Length: 70
Image (cartoon, rainbow, N blue to C red):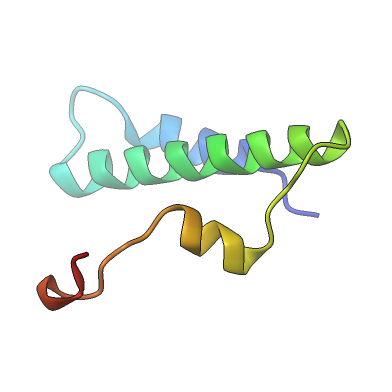
C-alpha cells in the first residue's frame, strides 16, 4: 500500500524560499492529498466510515467547466 507520508515528504522538498509558483502549487496539492489519505486510513483503521471513490468524488464536487456549476 502507498504511504501517504511520501506525498508529504515530496511536498516539503518543494516548499522553500526559492520555490517557484509551480513548486508551491505542487507542494500544496501533495500536502492536501497526503492529509486526505491519512485521514481516510485513520477512519478505516478505527472502523469508521471510509467512503468509496465514487462517494469521495460526490463529497467534494469539482466542476469540469463553468457550465457545470450548481
